[in-house]
Length: 106
Image (cartoon, rainbow, N blue to C red):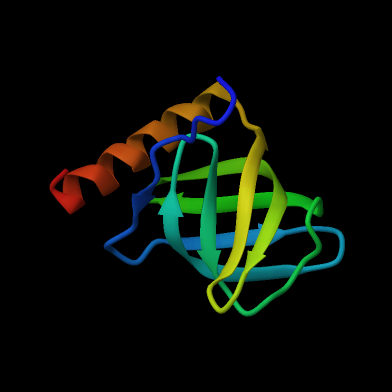
């Protein structure tokens, strides 16, 4: 549906996010997360549309996805949209969303 946004959950606990792309590689902290993307606190600036891979460690597993930069959010960092992930990584994303939702008490 046009105009509808996915429910975003603000990360309460520290959640590390790694990014690897053709022109940059860095780590940052998860600010918020939804089924469609995430906001990462970092000092890097990438152009909208830049592609790369993110990884979020989850205990024994690591959630991985292809992402596209949607925008730079001063002074926070970068907003990414998920563009591709495996079914297993989609399940890990749902597990992480549930963990954040439970920690927030919502």
